[in-house]
Structures are given as structure tokens and as C-alpha cells.
Amino acid sequence: MKKITYSSILKLLGKIESQNKSIILAIDGRCASGKSTLAEEISAQIDCNLFHMDDFFLPFERKTKERLAEPGGNVDYERFIKEVMQPLKENKPVTYRKYNCSIGSLTEALHFPKKKINIIEGVYALHPALQSLYDYKTFLTVNPSIQKERILKRNGQKMLEKFIHQWIPLEERYFTALEIEYLCDVVIDTSYI
Image (tube, rainbow, N blue to C red; front, side):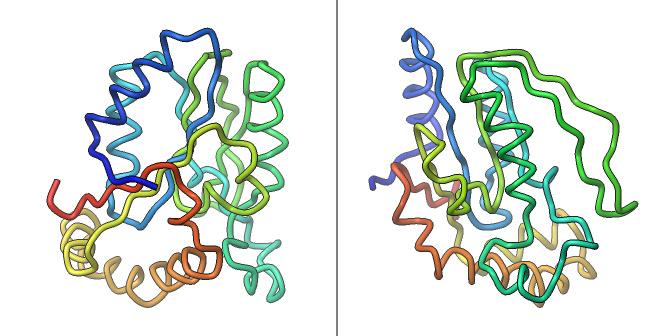
């Protein structure tokens, strides 16, 4: 595990892009650490597919007590494997439907062509059911006080409270129980980026 910067990741991916090998890169990490920003920056500079774990939250009817007791259990990793990872591993195009939490159902299908570089971005990207499927694993972290400032600026006070009391504790339990940061090839602290 080594700490590097955003620009180093872009250089690494540039080298990978020039090879004759397809890769799947995971970007996991704390909320407001810049996972989406990094993934979007990469996809703006390199021809790649970008998939978001937020599209695979567990539907309400599957949120059993047992499932939610599992670290990272609030993501639908089974559907993610079937609809995204299996086609990527078979070098096929990907089609899936986002889960929209506000309406409690799947949206229209999204279609992604075969590409050499595929990025999976979001908390729970390194769930144990997915870990072995990646070529590279990245973890983004951020100082808790800076994290709260970013969430407040991005989401407002009401949502900050939800993050503090619900989502951050779930994420931290997942990171700690499964030692996610220590599984990664690269760790980036975005506190002062």
C-alpha cells in the first residue's frame, strides 16, 4: 500500500491504457473523500466505462435484519456481479438498471460498450464478494472534520445529520470490519486536495 496523488493515478492509467490488457479499477472510500470526482476526472481524460455503486443500493424489500447486520450488506452486490462484473470479465458490453431509492424501483436500462478500462466507484465497491474481481484497488480517505464540511456544503444541514447518524457509521463499520483500506494498492488522503 502506498500513498499517491490523483495525478499519479492518471499517469498509471495512461500506462495501462497503452497496454493490450483490459482492467477493472475499484475506487472505494469514505463519503466526501472525492471518489466520484476522481472517477470523473479519470473518465474525462481516458476512454473508459464508469460504474457507480450508488446505482446498486439494496432494495427496501431485501433490507432484512440479517442482511443489514452484514458489513456492506446494504449494497446489492449479487445484482452488481451478475449485471456488471460478469459481462466485464467476459469482455462483453454491460447493461443494467439503476436502483432509485427515492421511488424504490429500477430505472430505464443503461448501456455500456466494451472498453479496455472500467472503473467501479463508490462505497462498498470492495465488498468481499467483489474484491477478487478487480485488477487495481484504490481507497480514498478524508479527515472527519473536513468530511463534515464537504457534506454540509454539498448536501446541506439536514442531510449532514443523516450522514452523521446513519450513513457514516455504516461505512465506518464496513471499512473497519473488513479492513478495506489495507486491501488496496493505493491509498489517497484527499483532506487537503
